[in-house]
Image 1 (tube, rainbow, N blue to C red):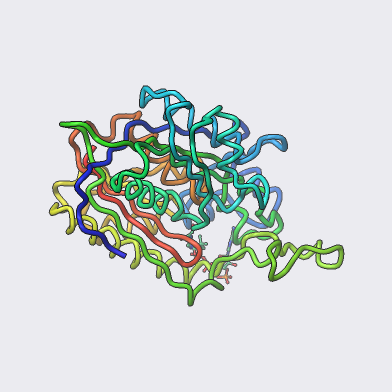
Image 2: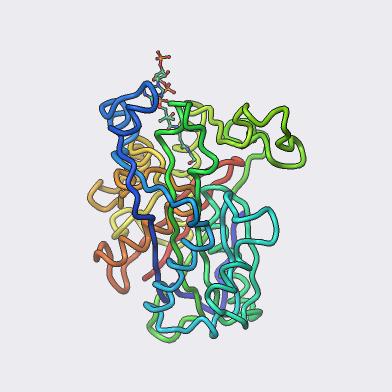
Length: 333
Ligand code: UT7
């Protein structure tokens, strides 16, 4: 789905992120399942991930990331008009995690809801909120990607448990003033023919968890990794190319590409196909693994705070996940 350029420019006014304290290393995982640090690093690039405490929920991580984004944007929670949380691990099936976040922030003037687009959720939220702001419905929005994937991980399955982690990232979007940055182009896509490649089969209305099936790990993430890998590379490349073209940029104009953090080999393949040198591609999956909707949001915040780009620079975000879903955004910072 594409878009024409809108009249009202929307900028990213602040970013924030939060990861839990507890670090789970590859070495620790090698004591839990038949794997090794060498296999995980070579095949994925991941060295460690964060695991939230039992009493630390997706909403708590979201709120901590949001407070940092608000602080950077120089805004108070009371000024926020819209809160959208992208997550596949909500605190509760209902109400939405965004409602818990609204309460925790004291953002009493905000409308709040969740979206479910797996790893692509943060950029889905960015596009939706950009439109709602540029159409005049809201003046600003707090978008959050947050996951407690440790609660939907099968810790006995080496093919998936080495991949995932917990965390949250946030961004404040608002109408841009003169000379400020702009979300220049966005792109998103879905292929519902491929739902079976990456899913949590149980816990929903199709397959409720019962006393009979409780031990079968039906509530955990299942992935056909090889198939997902190939499609991820192609779809992310295409989505990134579309926003770069629509923005009127060339590869050499891009200061930083921030991709979904699932696998370093996927990231390298995309950088290669986009002809963007590796030093301009932001990577932090070695520290956090794949945190689904949170991954690109945490990476955006870390890239922002570590000076990977500066005001006026051109940056490209690109993501891929269950659905299958994908999305990209071209932002003039
Ligand atoms: O976030 C949403 C999007 N997700 C992605 O984009 C993930 C895409 N997929 C991937 O990143 C990769 O496919 C994985 C990292 C999941 C797997 O890497 P792979 O190179 O595709 O490995 P594979 O699944 O083909 O497995 C290769 C071998 C198998 O053994 P055999 O059959 O060759 O004897 C696996 O059993 O590696 C084995 N294996 C492991 N060995 C040690 C699988 N997991 C592990 C493990 N430790 N943790």
